[in-house]
Image (cartoon, rainbow, N blue to C red; front, top):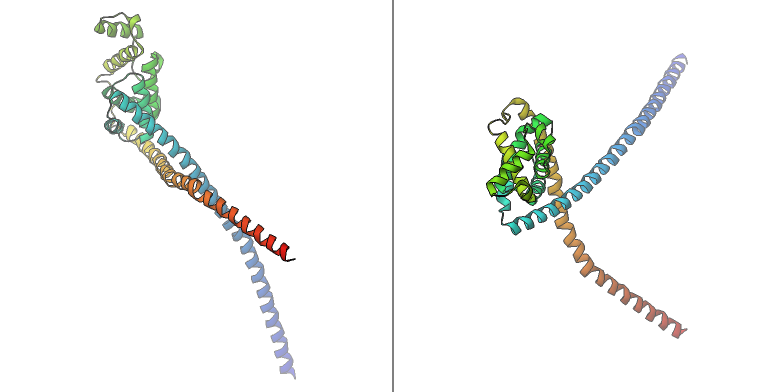
Length: 278
């Protein structure tokens, strides 16, 4: 009897211990479910949001790139410039730290300002070298120097190490053309400033092989690659989606409308037949 009582007591203790352990495990399981389930859901939502944002940004970048490419190609043909050769030369002059659409945008503006392809490439070399002075990217430096040349902005040129006398530059260039400075066209004035900048910085460009320049360009290269990726993805999506959307608009929608109209006609016929039978 005593043994039976002891066994019963121990069995009860064991069962209670199992029940307590089981309860504790359920509480722990629920805690993990709440914590990690919420985290997984949140992570998934963040991932979806990031993908949507990337696709949206890519489509925008891709569309802008296509417009830029078209504008650059059209202008190049009009003035007889080899667009592919100019883009390759500019990318090479920048040490390939600018993406194609930025190059095309910059080249388009420079061509509109009356600069020749070889002058544009040289300005890119200057921008790459002197951007270390202004703390700009090569792309921003090129755009700045291009605008300064076109609009005779001495302060911007000075920031890049090109200290020139605008009036003197105009007179010198006008003399080579046999005209006065006042008679220079917009293109003539841009040519005058370009010549003065090129002459002033001849042999004075910052060494692009310096470690600080290499580090700066490594950062620009990474940004360029990311931007180029978004443009390429965007253009691919546009090339795939728009033809499909156009096909759907021209082919699928009329078929669906026609099918719907036919279905309505059949339905009305059936209803009329039933009404006649009644």
